Image 1 (cartoon, helix red, strand yellow):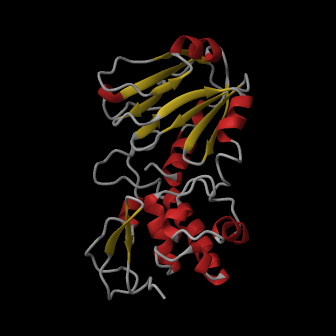
Image 2 (tube, helix red, strand yellow):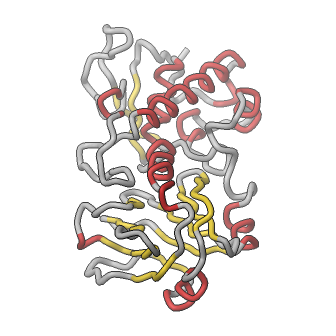
Amino acid sequence: MPELPEVETMRRGLLPVVGAVIADVARPPCACRPITIEPELTAFRRRVVGRTIVAIDRIGKRVVVRLSSNDCIIFEPRMTGLVLIADPPGAEHLRLRVDLEGFEQPLLFWDRRGLGSVRLLSPAEYAVRLGPEKIGPDALTLTAEQLQQALGGSQREIKPALLDQKRLAGVGNLYASEVLHLAGVHPQKRCDRMTTAQWRRVHEQLLHVLEEAILYEGSTLGDGTYRNALNQSGGYQNHHRVYDREGDLCRRCGQATIERIVQTQRSTFFCPACQTKR
């Protein structure tokens, strides 16, 4: 968290700064452990000041700010990072400020837990770090056939497999649980034992869940950390069917209660009636 819907929501919220010229970059005082910012600030500033923001893109779970120099600023939120063009949730976790000519509000990177990063990459560095060998196809662009081809030969369980960013970019723990529930696939089903019909259902619900979550501007969970680019909460948490609902009655079948298991050290939520092991 944030996952694809949250980062895509941030990206769309940042679109007003396209065309702006970067006036300065600063690292505000922060008593928390420092995040990774590459290169060091003096070199970072030298390469971006005076450059125009020509596009705001996304690759997987990262926001990509493209500059007129062809360099890119990559914001990786990880667990609690936010990219904002509004006042942050609190000044104590503000990590980077990008001042823009003609804009009263700067572009900000805020990170409560300090696990995120900001990297300025040249086109060659971008290709090495974020090329197709490192980041798989975006979850919103993959076909059902491509999804099956990417994961179908694996002996891994389907839930952890969906989180493999080298195979499928953007899906995280929350949305994988939601997708598999709607697809009627047990999270422990091995990829190589899934049928083509099951892969098609997973793909259909993958698109449905991600697009629906984007419509509601992502999920703001109980800790309230995730906010969109304007520091407003998302709304998709009110539509979760299984995630973080252990012990609650399934909203789909109305018969069984949601269960929780741990897969690769992460919580998975599912309905034992809707998602049988058979």
